[in-house]
Amino acid sequence: MEPRGEVFVLGLVLSIVVLVISVLISVWARRLTRNLGDYYVAGRSIGAINNGLAMVSLALSLTTFIGLTALIIEGVYIAVAVYASFTAAFIGLMILAAPYLRRHKSFTTMAFISERYDSKTLRYISVVVMMVVSVLYLAGNLKGIGIVFYFLLGVPEVVGIVVGGLVVTLYVTLGGMYGVTYNQTFQTIVLLFCLMLPVAMILRALGTAGWFFPPLGYGDLVPEMIEFVPHYFWAMLEHPITYIAIFLGSFFGIIGLPHFVMRFFTVRDAKEARWSTVLCVFLVGLVNTTVYATGFAAVYFMQTTAGVELTPAAYDYMVFILVEALAGEGWLALAVAGSVAAGLSTVSGLLMIMGAGLIHDLYGELKPEVDDEKKLKLSYLAMFLVGVFVILFSLNPPEFILKAIMWAFGIAAAGLGVPIVLGIWWKRTNKYGVGVGMVVGSLIGFAGWIMIDYMGMNPVDIPFPFFNTYLYGPMGWIKVTVLAVCFSFILTVVVSWLTPPPPENLQRQVDVMHGWPDYDEKRYNGKGLPIAVIVISVFLLWFMTTLYDVFPK
Image 1 (cartoon, rainbow, N blue to C red):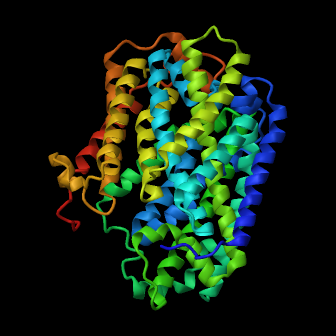
Image 2 (image 1 turned 180 degrees about the horizontal axis):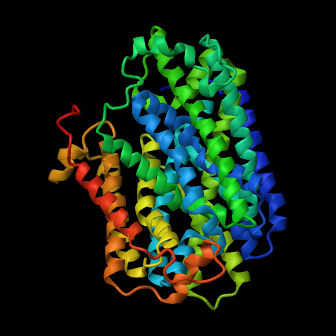
Image 3 (image 1 turned 60 degrees about the horizontal axis):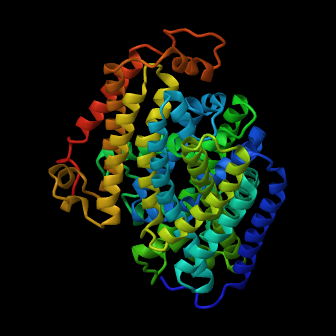
């Protein structure tokens, strides 16, 4: 797609306003930062509403704003699974992890894994996994910012990547977690306003009766859509394992993504952690259904408007195309500002966790004698250097932003989500099982990304019988997530069972996380959970090899 052909002044002005306010918030927040606890977890003082809104901004990245819309156009049935699984994942986060992680009182995911299993080696491994996941996630979102600048100014995407990356690096470095939190709250409000209203105007222009409530506003266009695209609401065009892979990646990936988990270490107590997740689930569901309405409108628009032909590479721009064509430049300016806010919010959270991981979890462990004041100074430097590194990496961004994000989810699920969930719910989980499970699981996901995404290999052309037999289809590569997560679960449970149990002081952490005032050796130590985990994982691996004669290649 070509840019608009001229500088979009109104959109540029609103985007600059968002950028300036973000920096000013961090300058103000820096006054609140006095020690490492303030810098990394905002003094554990954030309330449920503030934290919930901040979590929403992490969830509703540019992947949601433009990447998911592109996927809806590319494969509507798979997109439904993506946003439904992503919304459900927050419910899993609330039930399986949120309050328990807060009671543990760690700073980061990596610290939790290290302290729960009493292993420095696991800390180092989890830092490596965190960096891989974060860089993949960042590359997708920085490309999204580049797309916005390309649309606004007609400049190459790399210019937007550099400018957006430097702005976020500046305000994260300045304000720490206080600055990140208040910025994310501000950016969530901007995103909600700048997404819902333009989409409502799109639906109004298409003549829908319920345009004022975008999540359901397209309802009276459904009969025509079925006529134009008969398979639009037919989900089973793909092997069911594709949808299971999306669910596993989303469900355990959310728990494993360190910038999400870090938000629970900032709240006052476990109750605030739970209610902030409730607010996040509601708003994420509202926005995801609105994005689906946007994708519906895009497909409908392309089917009913003569002469509209777009290449798949242009689908990431579809939100802007729709708003400009159907709503006008004023609403387009809002959409652009909302997309800038979406990109900034997610990037800031990722930079924060990367800097914390390098200084708190890596340097702090290697140099325990260094005092907190020096660590704080080094944190500022680390945040800046991480930001520059990510900008350089993102100069060669992925073709589709959603693809990089989904790889990040899969690797996070296998490498970090599994040890977190088992560490909370099964006392018998030990460092040996976690070490084997997280290394093998994350390597499966990472190797899949290297071959399929980075090297550009078609899964069916990879010279492994399993790959070329089972990984076909529009998103055949996503099935790698099933392999990664299932093997991570199986190996963690089996190796933990075959090796000595963790000492009592580590098992006590499980009772503390669940709020028990006493210790009971039998509590959370039964055989039902690990057996169920193995049975389900083995079943999914077997199911992955079946039914391929039913679904077309």
